[in-house]
Image (cartoon, rainbow, N blue to C red; front, side, top):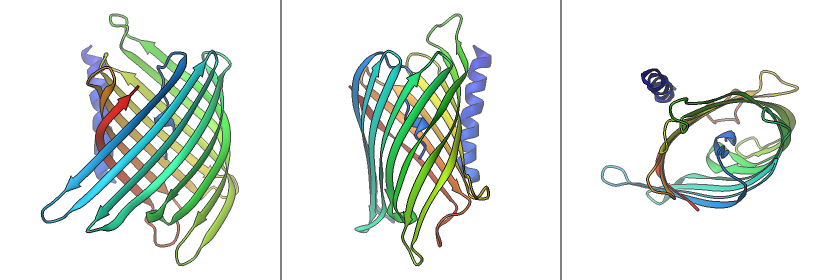
Length: 258
């Protein structure tokens, strides 16, 4: 038990330490749903007044459907932020994914995605792709069946069409590899943690690559109410002109699940 808690604490320190040193759809996956239809919504608010004033709003709607070896989910997410009535955050995406499990180890999946982000000059990005998801580790606590550790790896590819605004408008179309590692742990009935890292590179230009890291810590307050702390880090080796190579976001809020 002490060793298990030490490992979890070490991972958490790594996550938040990384945040001060410097759109991950795998983080949106539900790993413990039974067969059926599910829907959920999440709303986060942020407000500060005094020397500086700003207001942020984050919303998410989600639908999941599971039947036998098939799993589908649809997610719509939008974020908006304003300071002194001037927008500094305006982005969103829609993601649809379908999965078929051949056995306990191998899952085949396909996906569609559309997104925009005004403040990274991303007018529009459209994706279509697929790949294989491999389960590398599945371990349940001997003394407590609620404790669980899962480790997955994903390999695949996607076709990307990206429109970028700014001084020099760009319209880019290319094939990109997408690979990830995903760690999920359930500490007990109320506490869960997830850590995911992506590496994506352009097939024709290996120097064009992206790194994505997501971490989340979730506390169950009631049967349908959860508190969640999240971290998101993105690095782009070749961003649009006048755009920084990285973005870092830390947030927390309340999630409602029906």
